[in-house]
Length: 233
Image (cartoon, rainbow, N blue to C red):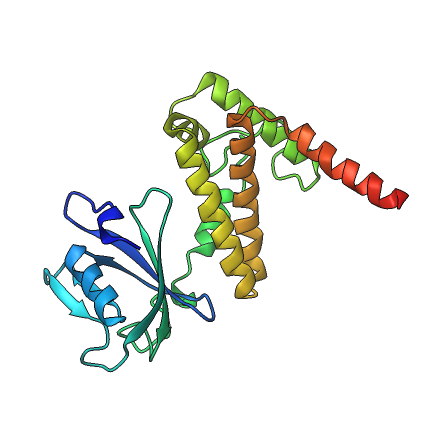
């Protein structure tokens, strides 16, 4: 990875998600500037930039809980990093393996927000026509129609409108992010998390298909054709 390829923000920083290379556990979110990133690549251990102290800090320099760098990857916009590490101790200053503890989970709040209200409003800022909260496959067709309607009308404040307004690169980024979250949830054998992340991935994939003007029915047609061909063999 070339440091010159990284797009630092107006403060000269880039967010760095630190993840256990073996377990895929997300350990922490920190920030790097150009100097700390170069230092990280040089010594093979994480070095971040402290926004509060406004100085570099070498993770584990005093505690011994260093993080040996296995790989560093940029996202598609080149403005965020994932740092895969071999941790030599806990990542959190509290002594926990990860700074993202289960006790601090917001899942309950998110669950409440994603359950459609009486008027059908969802956390995406959209309204699902008809019966909300159904579990039948018909919801895919309903959602597809809604997404097509959002692209045509572009109502202000709707999340789907935001995606279409930002364009295909933003949509692709979200598909990639959600696919990564599905992988992480599966690796962690977290069925509850996997359920939500899979739903997010399907939604963003439907938005992508609409942006590309590829009817969802054609995708289903491919699955049906494969199934029929398999049955004939």
